Image 1 (tube, rainbow, N blue to C red):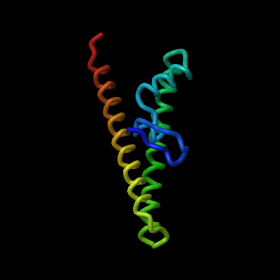
Image 2 (image 1 turned 30 degrees about the vertical axis):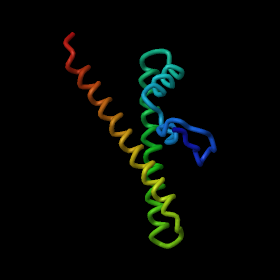
Image 3 (image 1 turned 45 degrees about the horizontal axis):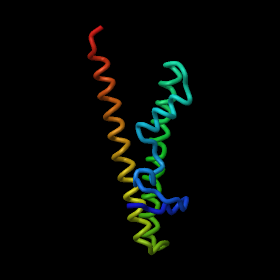
Image 4 (image 1 turned 45 degrees about the vertical axis):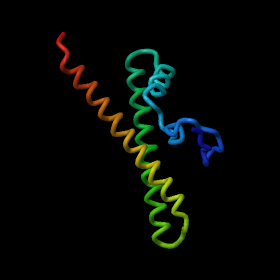
Length: 114
């Protein structure tokens, strides 16, 4: 199933692509393009993850703003509110999953015997 991204007007087949957040593969490609050695690579991955958090915060803020507009009568569109809430929910779930994966990888590395 394909969707039209209302912000850009592009046809998108994957709903995650509509969120404009980086997936794990995109973070890896972004990191490899930005850094050549391990310190640069870590910094690039950390920067991409931080960018993902900022995007999630933006979606949460947008959803809250839509709720306020609807409550104050400035907007009658429940459709926009539903879209903003779903984007925020999906982005937050993705961010939490990414955090859990990073935490688990850290624990695995720390438990390795050298």
